[in-house]
Length: 113
Image (cartoon, rainbow, N blue to C red; front, side, top):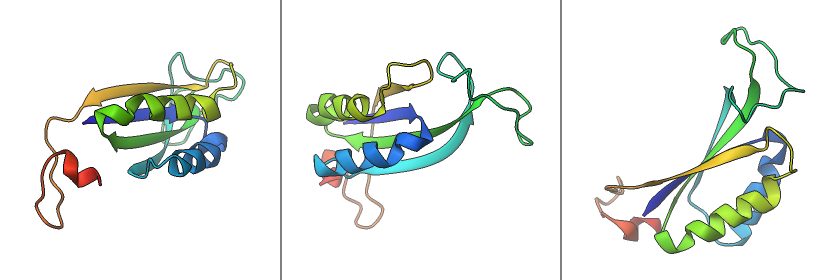
């Protein structure tokens, strides 16, 4: 199993989310955030009362996935989130060492179905 973390522009979340669900990728968690780095859009940076640095609004999508679904998920995100501009975002993929479903105690990759 893998954990995919994608940081994208908030305005593109709905398009990305809909296409992921259409393609059967349903284990999605979304977080609203602010970030800075090479992926920041220099035309839309601002200061924040909570974070005084210059940064951009981002949405973080987390998806727990079977290894066989990783490429499809990445391609789907890129298809809907890319404008070929600085600030489009970044995707990270990490291994999941262990997983357990709280409801029934089931473990491993079977909890994703």
